[in-house]
Image (cartoon, rainbow, N blue to C red; front, side):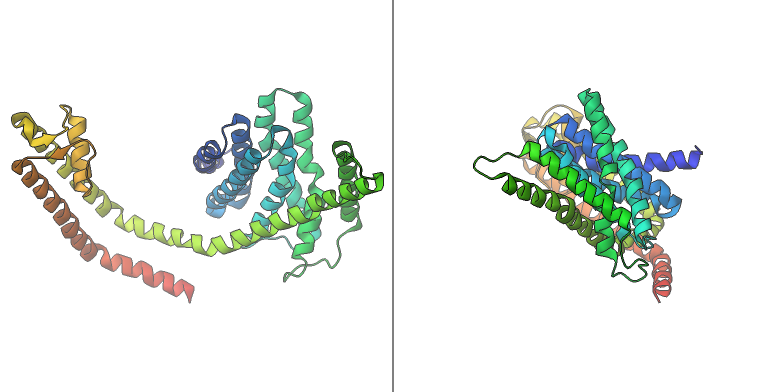
Length: 362
């Protein structure tokens, strides 16, 4: 693999992991559920990002992987361990909806939808492997790995039906093979539920009808809802996230002034932490709750520069309050003076960037 692709993979994986892993631990304490969210997010996000190329791939991959990973962790944390199969259909349909909603999507027929759904199902199956391997059961690994691929006909059919009125859609009717595959999956799902669902006092016909209704809901309404949710969410997010690409141009111009401001602000904090420590040494009663280490004085100076009270140290004597007041005045003056200087120096560059974006918009 070329170094460029390796670096691109690392960037996408790191971005997804930073978002999904902490969220997974926040919503569930089960290690396997966190592995499900992280594995699915990483597999689908990296796959989508690499297919998108180096231009839009990283951000597309991170966005898609983060949404998939968070959704998978939420569902996995809400269902019992044996109910992992419930997340296959909605997460796969959500992934297809995200891809379909990205601008420039090439999904214009049932064949394209089947191909894209199959690719995402393989990535989904790979993402489930870490969690299933953690269980240490070969049968579970085999079944869970095959489930996303088995669900391809149902998800592709639902996604195609919901997209057929879109401009550029080629096919008026779904292929009979796709319909047949979805029907077979419906029958299999009904038979599986027949073994799981037994209601006392209900006739066999009633149980069959109930199973068919539940299977239809699982294979039709649920993926339809999540597909539309994914497509609508990404369609709404994309134009708003483009603002950040514009922001990056401004930050490149402002990077050096921002760094200069940070260095000066940190210098003021370090300087006054020494002043506070020296005053506390010669006048122990100047501060209440003061320690003897530089860490306490540095923390006190940092919060003082931000205009916030530090919880453990407080100025008591007049000299301490005067020193704190001088620190606040110097910090505020530094911010105002440097801001004025920065704006006067980089203002023309920012204006040129704004004009360029305005011309591109026209």
